[in-house]
Length: 190
Image 1 (spheres, rainbow, N blue to C red):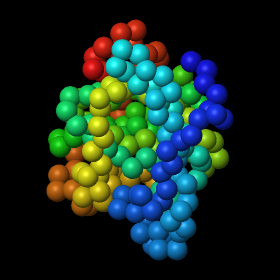
Image 2: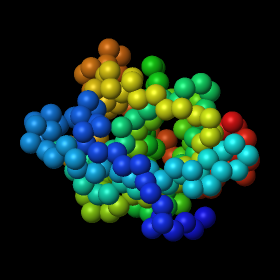
Image 3: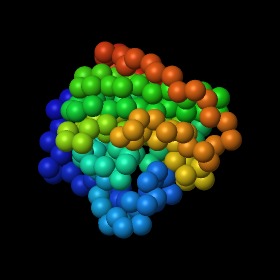
Image 4: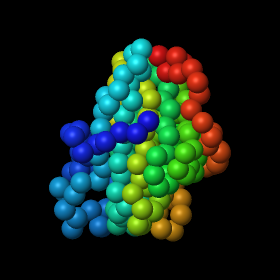
């Protein structure tokens, strides 16, 4: 679906909204807290209770860490389907005893399973990430577990993956492959 975002107003996630989940605390002390990290264009379309959004994450570094979303869980039993429209993405999914990442490129599709928290990372220093998602219009995001633990269970940095020591149990990170197309029937998102 081709969408012109120039006439849409995004919700903007700034660094000041993410201070609790940033890995590089030394960098954070001198960073501009009004730095715009990503743009969320919500409710571009809605079909049968399922909402279509677009998120744009510019290429920039958060000190040693690649730019990312804040991370959230869905309240209740809601999944989500992402498609990379431009650039590359790393989706980091986690729940108590499992954590895995999916590296995705333009055209790739990633399903966020029920009860998994997730963070999206732009692993590039020079290419913007633009992605779309389908999610239930009734879905609510819960950011508290990520804030409480000071980020996801792993941070993705220039040096690679670093464990977040604020977690008591840190499962080994595994990797999965993306899908090549969006499922025809999205009713499972309701």
